[in-house]
Amino acid sequence: MAMAKFLPEGRGLLERVRGLPVARPLLAADHVYLVGGAVRDLLLGGAPVDLDLVVEGDAEQYARSLGGRLTGHDRFGTASVVLDGHTYDIARSRRETYAHPGALPEVEPAPLAEDLGRRDFTVNAIALALGDGELIAAPGALEDLEGRRLRVLHDRSFIDDPTRLFRLVRYASRLAFAIEPHTLSLANAAIEGGALATISGPRIGAELRLLAREEDPVAGFIGLRELRLDRAVDPGFGLDDEALARRALELLPADARGDRLVLAVAGRRVPAAELGRLLDGMAFEAEDRDAIVVAAARAEEVARALAAAQAPSEIAAAAADAPAELVAVAGALGPERQARDWLGQLRHVRLSIDGRDLLAAGVAEGPAIGRGLRAALAAKLDGHALGREQELAEALNAAGGSQ
Image 1 (cartoon, rainbow, N blue to C red):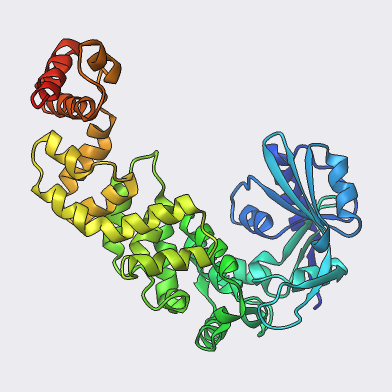
Image 2 (image 1 turned 30 degrees about the vertical axis):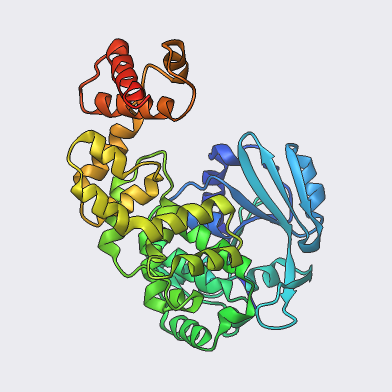
């Protein structure tokens, strides 16, 4: 594949790169290129934080020359460097072959032109030489970037690597790019042909996790639905209520996880046990799996309890021990006021006393301690215990009531 070269435009871009804090440690070496999303985003006017570099030569040697903490990945001829809080992914230029559809690629060194030709979409097949500022692009790449289009570089792209289907959705939603018609037809054919069955669950899970962590994950999951890619993951999986997901995200506090929430909304139609197995098969961590499953399975139950709650103590009882993601989804189903009260204020209320204070006051160790503390917290939430002495009085009264 013949690459187009643009020297004046590239030199102007190189000056912008040199002005980025992330680019300061880079050496102006020959045969080292900034590639992929970083160049795309620079051409769109952005300022990338992490940089992908390609070396026509020994990538690890170049990586070591930067200093910082180095992690090598010999199979693919790549290395990662973390330096001054920035991450640099460095790879030797290579070609890839696939033993069968969905297989991980076999790689071998190759010139930059072949390296760009193996990439997922034309707008990511652009390189900037850090030595002289030459801009090198796959045919049509700059035109597609200007036209805000996503186009594959060859017709077997989604067959060779079906994870590109998820990347297609991710880039389309993040960049607000249109999918070029032929690329869309290739994507639909790959999905209908069962392309996802050729890749492992963990690889699918990795792509879903990336999509769920996007700045607007709802847009990404709507993109999955439009391609019917979510149904290819599981027939019951998918975000079919955009308004619900957006209301839930609006309720979600900053210390909670939007990615878990969106995955939970997408999993609401999958039975809990089946959803747990599905997430396990996609290599979700146990803590994430459990949070997603409970938010998906219990949202309607908690919504009913919240709807029936009026006093702060009743709201606290309805949301007892529920993770924030679950309460946000439940609130989005109807009782938004109660969910907002719990997430914004009530869950942070703490007693000034603890079990040691009750023991010191003569309460025997056992269930009475917990009963007393719960009563004191309820009284404090409802405004009936305004200080330490009143909290202790409420606790002792409840603890002693059945001693």
